[in-house]
Image (spheres, rainbow, N blue to C red):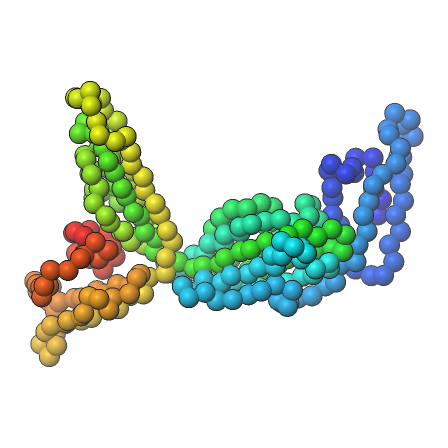
Length: 298
């Protein structure tokens, strides 16, 4: 193994070797006197530890997400530290890995997600989507013994649905339209009511905004719109009504966040929805389907 003049401090290359002895030679293959003399290399001991989490903190949050971190703003992570975690993606789900913050020795200490012969470096802060084909992949952190930074924090979550939360405060000549699988479901021309709308992960959402010229020289507040989105794992319960159990009742205050109930009638009979008294229904959505694609009202 040799390092030639193309390997510089500004262009680091990292190589790993098994064993206890390593010989390094510098060779000028062309005897070109114009090539600058010398090279720079750092050699560090890196232990090989598989499925090792002791050097990171791993915890399950109340919302079911997995938090993995070695952050230490005062002392930095330990030299020669390493940890790994196996990602499991349930059937019908995908996953998101968010890494914030990301303070590692650039080019040397690494975060990777790998499966088989495929490996991806996580070089910066960001959100990384992990598709179902990468079920069983390994999230790994490896540090050498040279320089330690503050570390990283990552949150891993699986989802089968996502939500959109539109808001709008528009002039009456502007409009904001939302299409679900090419079908128009919402068309806001003034205000958007408070809504958090769930859709299956493979739903195609199209947003169209048209800005028109105001018919009045005065407008209270700046016109604006926004759509927030969030990946969720939705808990679903299906109730099949029949002659023995013709009704289903639920206390709305007991409905948890990201929980859905699908009530089906026998032989496609008509269903009647009855609310016993007025409730604040801002965060409860009604769909006339079991796939969340036929929105009725909030």
